[in-house]
Length: 271
DNA sequence: CAACGGACCTGCCTGC
DNA sequence: TGCAGGCAGGTCCGTT
Image (cartoon, rainbow, N blue to C red; front, top):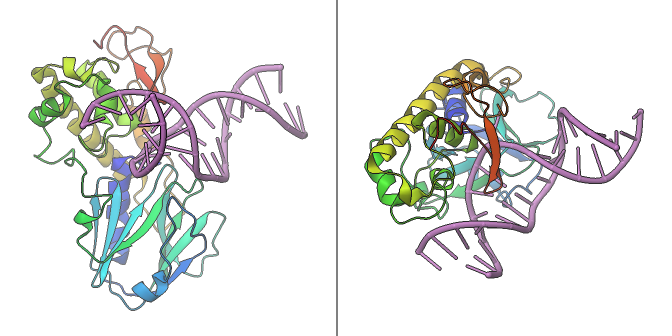
């Protein structure tokens, strides 16, 4: 579920409903996520007013006067805003109940997600402190990508998915950006020219921006059941399309395994 | 230091 | 129909 576009769409969706409201209870039903959910979350958050919901990489940051709640959705997490009286279902691990009778509910079947608390500047939290630039910011461009790629032997796709280089590029969009830029996924990062790094950086920005717009449509209503998985699927050029015709040259899309992730590419268009 | 595999989980789909 | 096996949108950590 959550690639960066969906995390950003989630942020926008929940923010409008919960920002400015005060927590009346934090209900933890399952504390065994990627890391244990902090004890005494209820004591920490009770009576605290949520001032803002921001995002860094795929982490959502809920800002309170006494600290910040850091949420990560992992592979299968989702957040919804609904009436606090709505009965929780299987895998609904956490509710933040607000003073208007609604709650923010975290569901995460695979439990790869995380709920963490910090009193410090969240940017200095160990998980966030060493992250690379945001892909849609001016700090990320072809020059930055080329600096990181220089002298590296690993596959360019693995480099794009390395959060020290740039954050938020998951498996789907790494595939799509490489196709858009005409770069072969297993090419050694150090063998990608500056000009092609420019194209790759542009492609990442283009595909993520388009997906955020599409995600906005898909997950518009956070108070209802759930966003159907992926309006943007229709826009994918190579991901999940093994054997189908390349949109540019009509040759069959191929699939391979790279760093344990499915990788899709056109052998004719990508070098 | 760089690069790679394993690990963490459940659900869903395929094929026998 | 049942069951085994493989795969899934992430990413930290230990080993080489």
